[in-house]
Every structure is written in C-alpha cells, then in structure tokens.
Amino acid sequence: VTVTVALAGGVGAAKFLRGLCKIVSSHDLLIIGNTGDDLELYGLHISPDLDIVMYTLAGVVDETKGWGIKDDTFHFIDSLRNLGFETWFRIGDRDLATHIIRTKLLSEGATLAEATAKLCKRFGVEAKLTPMTNEKVRTKILSDNIIIDFQEYFVKNKTENEVKDVIFQGAENAEPAPGVIEALTQAERIIICPSNPILSIGPMLTIPKIREAIIKRKAETVAISPIIAGKTLKGPADKVLRSMGYEASVIGVARYYREFINRIIIDRADSAQKPELEKLGFEVTIADTVMKRIEDSVNLAKVAAGSS
Ligand code: FO1
Image (cartoon, rainbow, N blue to C red; front, side, top):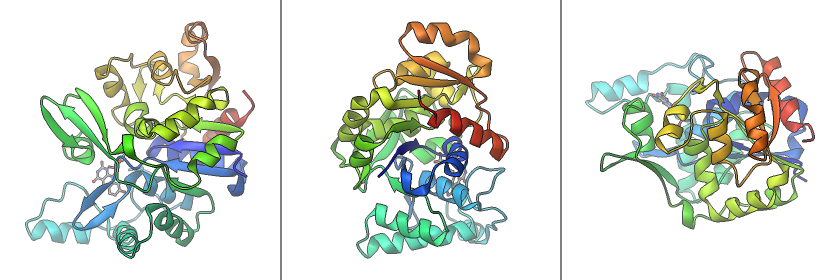
C-alpha cells in the first residue's frame, strides 16, 4: 500500500526525495514524475525529470549541474557537433546509455512506466518512480506569437523568452500511468515537491484524472514552496509565476495550488508571510528548505511527512 505519494519535477524535487527515501520505506512511497519536459532528439526518447530523480536517488547525479551523471564525458555530443549537428542539449556519454536503453524498450513495445521501472532497477533505485502518464505530453511556451518546445526555451534560449502562456500539449486527453490514481486515492499524504509549480507540477495538475484525484485529497496534500524570499534557487519559477499573473512569493505559490493543498511549507526567510497565508486558509509550516547537505533533505522530509 502506498502511504506517501510525491509529485516531482527536476532538481529541487530530487534533492528533497533523497531525504524522503531515508525516512520512508520504498514500498510505502510512489514518486510521480513530470514528463512534460521530455523530448525526442537524434531518435532518442529523453525524460530529463525522470532521469534527474533516478540519478539522484542512485547517487550518481552530477551534483554541481543537478542533472546528468557525475564525471561524465561528452565525446558523443562533441562528435555530433563536429559533424555539423546542433548540440545545445548536452547529452553525456554515460547518460546516453540511459536514453538508448529507454528508446529501445519503448520501440519494443514497453510503456514509459515499464521502461522507467527497468532503468531504476538497473541503477539500483528501490523507490518506485513512475511517469505521470505513458502518453505523450509536451510542455510548450507561448512567447510573442511563437510556440517554443520546453527544452528549447529552458536550455537553448536559457529561459530568456517572455512567457505569455504555458501549454501542456496532450495533457487534457492523457490517462494517468497505471497505479497513479490508486496511490493518490489511498495514500495517507501527498507531497508536492519544491519544484517549479507551473512548469514542473502544472503538467500533472492538467491531466484531468490526476487533477480530480488530488482535489479530493486536498486535506492530505502539502506543498513545499520552491520560492524563498521571492526567488528560486535554480530555474525560472519566480519569473514564470510573475508572467502568469502570480506573485513571485510563497503567496503566489499557495494561490497557484489553492485548489489542491491544505498545507504549505515555507522557508524561515518567509516567516513574515505566515499570517497572510493563514488568512487565505492555508495551514503553514515554517522550516529550513534550502537543501545543501543530505541532513537538510532528511529534516525537510520529516517536516513534510509529519502529520499536518
Ligand atoms: N540542462 C541544461 O541546462 N543543459 C543541458 O545541456 C542539459 C542536458 C540534459 C541532458 C539529459 C538530461 O536528462 C537533462 C539535461 N538537462 C540539461 C536538464 C534539463 O534540461 C532540465 O533541468 C529539466 O528538464 C528541468 O527540470
């Protein structure tokens, strides 16, 4: 039986999950990963957020970058560049093996959930990690009348485009992956990891059955704010919240999640916002949310998994 469900984006989620996995048994946990960031490149299916979580839990992640495998080399991508291909998305040589295996499994008829389970097993990850859906969902950025693929916006253009709207192509018609709804329905608690609310968690909340399942469990759902003192540690969450009409603050995060959560965990630096959040109807827990060492992640996980 799944006791805890965690909704996860990329780096922030992965750091948090490293702590969570130390305090909950892998049998009791289901991690649901965002696949709106997925892309097809050179014939390969790449699932960046699933890989960030998998590599982090396997202890092989490149900790300075937060993605990819540590001590990786880049001969493959450099060779592509020498052959005249675009190489703004830097796939490492070791990382490449993951994408080749995933693509091969998919071409043989496996679902993305099955391929993810197999890869996790090979990497020695005990926690259950599933994509939010086996179907194709792609996050697109609408900017000045052009539609940009997520990784092109994020990596190639370094989030410099103005975000007019965010589109989760395919999400409205996507079925959740097997087990997702059962886990959301049964779990004692649902934790929204400290990820970009709009870009990383938004795709999951747009899949109708996932959306409805979480709304029903609102009383048991807690979010950890990725915004600390009006800023993000990594990525454009503050910028994107603002351009979508939300404050870049814990208030903005809480407002974005208002239909889904009862409790929000905010950083000590944002203590002054607690009364306003309470006035809006949220239960508020103050904690240290910057995760530098594994102990920080464990402490934050204890706060999130504690009864609300
Ligand atoms: N992020 C970058 O900023 N630059 C890259 O070249 C890059 C390559 C890459 C390759 C494989 C992979 O799984 C992830 C990769 N990422 C890269 C991370 C990724 O773009 C984002 O961090 C996530 O999609 C957002 O969570």
